[in-house]
Image (cartoon, rainbow, N blue to C red; front, side, top):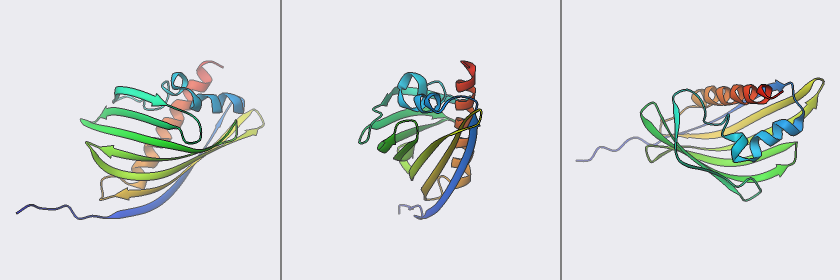
Length: 157
């Protein structure tokens, strides 16, 4: 007899705000090319990119990244839906762990000029599948990426 894992879905949302001491154009530019994005996205300790990281940054374009972390293989597969230069990015993506889908999400980044720099608000609405990922885990990982983005942006300032 084959044991089946119980199926479940948990819907949740988080928003994270960061203020960076650079112009909105610099913040936006960090998302739109593979050269820039590879410096901060998926570039944490313990995450090793395997395969090719691809990015076609336009509405309808896709992004793919496969990485090893904690002894597992993670696949990030995104499609961009709305891009407003220096203001907004909206994309949908799913994450797979060792070939098994663990979530499907809608991400939004809002970029706003503020005194002395740029405010970024990232909101994610997720469907976390079969108990394999949680909103808290995703928010923690996203905070790390946004901290890495800040380090990248200020390194050249």
